[in-house]
Length: 351
Image 1: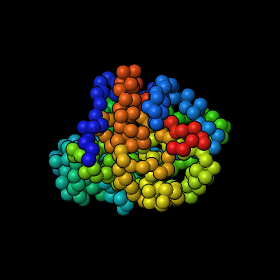
Image 2: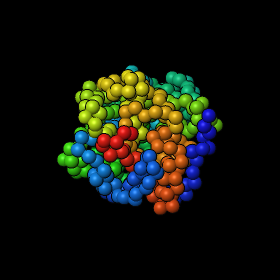
Image 3: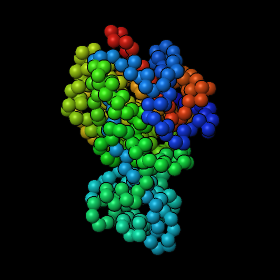
């Protein structure tokens, strides 16, 4: 059994990045040899030098919804914040609500002078509520007018440009948070990566409630992940399989891409096939990776499921040592922060 406290580390609050850098590729990059623990301090644009022809880079093309809505409770006029999480169909959404104690089944919340209304139809745990929405016109157009980007709770600065909490390749709308490792890429960098002979494929995982839910148990084996929707096309799966068969390396961008590929590989004998559905995979040390050879990721919260996932790809000791190095070197942390690259072995060497 592993304890949540085993994944704690000291993080000064002033290292939590509050705003994105002007240039996406200007972030720093800590390159980690996941076998030896060797560290290199780089800038993100240097990532190009670590790719080899025949590699495959996997990106999550989910698009963040302006999912944070501020409304008023119809009966009392109290301010209610609603964060859209999962579209359940038929204008019904799973949400997070603050203050949740004011919202019970039957409560009606109004947004934008009545442009949008929501009636609570169900109560979940941790502030979860289900709402049925009513409006005139097209829901996503109304949401674009009224909603704000749902920045994580540790970001207190206002975001001037909402596109900076969106990857340049975002396409499939449905996320409550950005797949933040993808924020470092520009169209120019992606073009350079392609020119190097690297295949780029896009898959989808809509980031949901699990991102906002802390690990509230002592032993990590008892933690339950929230389900998130994913989709991998036949074309993307075929490219990944071809890369593997030719001896190329699959490099995942972000924990969301990782969880998607590992979900499918775990269910199909180690092979990535076209698939879609809901995953609640929880990856922590002891898990054997089946699909990916390298991982580009941001720096994660202490004691989070994401630092556990990254530790499983290397070792807890190597990752915590890398995090100590990042803290000492004043790397920027979390969503708008710097990146880490757990580099794969050179071709011809086994994982």
